[in-house]
Image (cartoon, rainbow, N blue to C red):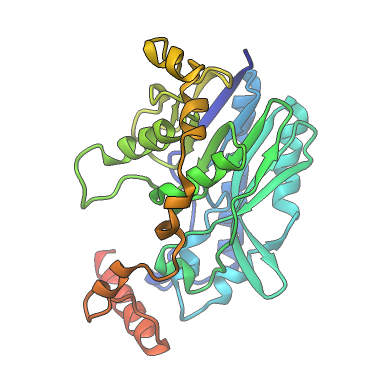
Length: 329
């Protein structure tokens, strides 16, 4: 038995300026980012005071992502992004050291002329134990952010941690890759996991299925609503109520994967369902999953289904988004 106390943090809102309303003041943008970092440190401290072994904070701890959608002034976004590690990491590391607590959080990272959306794992002494770069970027984010290209896992003092960021959760392959690499628990700092064009409750269903498919606990953290902790059998251990600034916690046994003591444990030699399913995989039959251009993509090349790609198409899309967002404010 390896029990750990886990926290998922749900801020209610994040201060920011509104460039689509004409506010592009860099001083106010920096101030808003600082206020967001102060908020994060306050809420993470509450998790530390609750005796948690690890706490997860949402994606984009500075609250600057939507500045990156404003193409008329790209520097409004880029001037706030730090090399890694940087001042933001140092602030969160202080909390980790003070409370002897591991911390997961999302931050934009600069490396040379590239920008990445990263999830960071800090150890109990504030040291960087791991960094993952978001692989699956929503199209608007890909205008200015470089995608990651792998799913590394990281050793914490209690076990092996896998990190996802936001949109990664939509792709079953991402969680599976982390588990195949040895992850024993997954953390997903995000902005949302519910989508409006699917059935009610699809977000929580998706979280539970990622856990069930891989027999791995999953911790989701986001602003406003939906922060949740799910066990390796899909049970919801803790869930934040919508519209509240809050922290939810749960105790997870990393050795507590589902067991099956029916005739299958006799037939297979193990009652550990995770062990059984992982050994019964047939990867030689899964080539279609990694094919760069599987046959189905041919159906999505005509107008109305093909993703935009040219500079002119992107600019036209941006102008339409600016028009819509401005008219709604």
